[in-house]
Image (cartoon, rainbow, N blue to C red; front, top):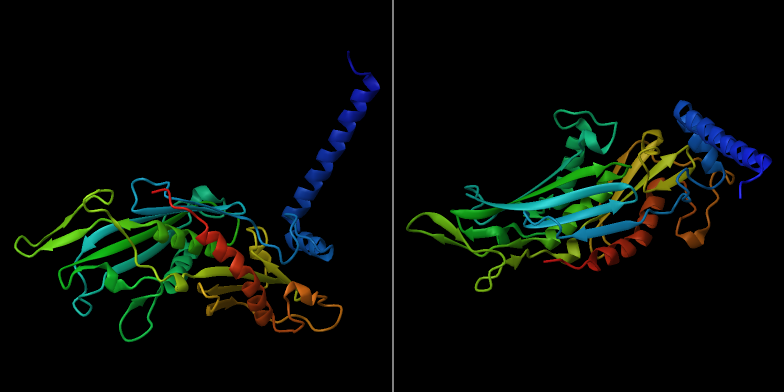
Length: 327
């Protein structure tokens, strides 16, 4: 039975009004992004529907790249990063004959967001790679040592043959906070990595490897220090009175300050990176925070971010350790 003409017209009019309102909002967001975000935060909500201290969901899939020694696919909200670990054999450095190499790198190609252009790695990608390298590989004494992996465990034959682990991550969809997602992707890929058994033949000077899936000489997993696996937790300060957790690509360029907190598997603070002035406005009306949500009633934004990071850390850690390897 055909609908009455008046009902059809009313439905079309309602749909048209909804589309017009959505179009107006999109135009306003593009022309006045800061005011747009400010109005949302005044209502205690963010454009994506989260409250200020709410984190996006994490989805982890490991072992999906068969050509890599280890791999992981991470989704942090809409931000998606795939990471693969490729093992190669090389000669060690002369001053460190018993240590292999861990080489992390991340790429932000043009395909993941319109903000990135084709061509050589962008400055943002280079800075991000350096930050990830600082997290995964740290100098803890006079000899170089990996934060999560003893580089001596990558030695096949002292002075002759060692493993080089290339930890390459690629962002395939960018919606902010690539630092946290990048750390997760690299850590999960390393936890999934299996190395073939390798022996060095001193007569021929060659290294012989078995298949990592051989029944006679099965591959071995990396000797990761689970207590030191890093977890990144990022925040943003906006308008002098709002602390935003896990910022999106829309929120990131509008932030006055960006803060990244890194904790190890035990929940110990390992590093903090801050860009901008981390001070919240004073005054009772500037910041109304419920102490039960874990935020300290202080002007120091950095301490408040660390407090929020400690609350979130356990949930992320449990999510990482709950992942089952496919291989």
